[in-house]
Amino acid sequence: MSKQHQFKLVLLGESAVGKSSLVLRFVKDQFDDYRESTIGAAFLTQTVTLDDQTTVKFEIWDTAGQERYKSLAPMYYRNANCAVVVYDITQAASLEKARSWIRELQRQADPSIVITLCGNKSDLSARRQVSEEEAKKYAEEEGLMWGETSAKTGEGVTEIFTAIAKKLPLTVAPSARGARPGAPGRAGVDLNRQANTTPGQGEQCNC
Ligand SMILES: Nc1nc2c(ncn2[C@@H]2O[C@H](COP(=O)(O)OP(=O)(O)O)[C@@H](O)[C@H]2O)c(=O)[nH]1
Ligand SMILES: [Mg+2]
View 1 (spheres, rainbow, N blue to C red):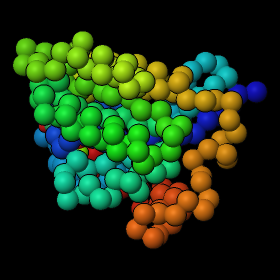
View 2: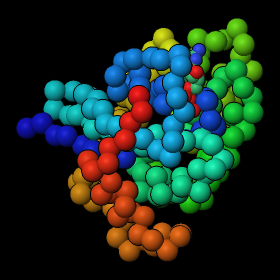
View 3: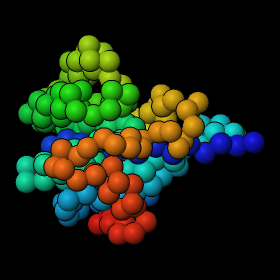
């Protein structure tokens, strides 16, 4: 009997590191040089096949990196099973921003969240400011998964999402995952509930 597992995944990271492009590559195998920036957040799904019996469906929340949307992020990561924190290998400052997102996740997200650090724009290695060694070492110290991708060429994209799918605990009943009844939202609203009900209704994607 085949099993489909479902996980919530949130993308975080500085603006313009390529979060939306990564999702577009992963979900539609497309790339667009002139994308409009994400407003608020966008929701998409994609399924990864691990073997004949096992598929993992990701419910992907692509957040906007701009500071003015930062206060919305907890709503997306609060009940996420996994987070992909993206930096741009040609912008050292974007790794600093990624570290700050990771610290926030370690403090505020569910302790079981699987965090992946993703260095995007690997096709621009001639302009590289962040070495593989530096990022990998940091990820190892923090117990994170790490990989480099290019949303432009597609390099590493399927691999990183497949690695996440393999890392997620497939033995837990899907219904027991994600939902944390009674966990109060920081703003006094039941944000879990909102995040659970939004998909399907106002699916928003500006791909
Ligand atoms: N060369 C290159 N450009 C990329 C890559 N990923 C994204 N971009 C470009 O970087 C800019 C920002 O991408 P976007 O996906 O909107 O970033 P977001 O703000 O993090 O969602 C756009 O001009 C993209 O075309 C990549 O892997 N390689
Ligand atoms: Mg975006």
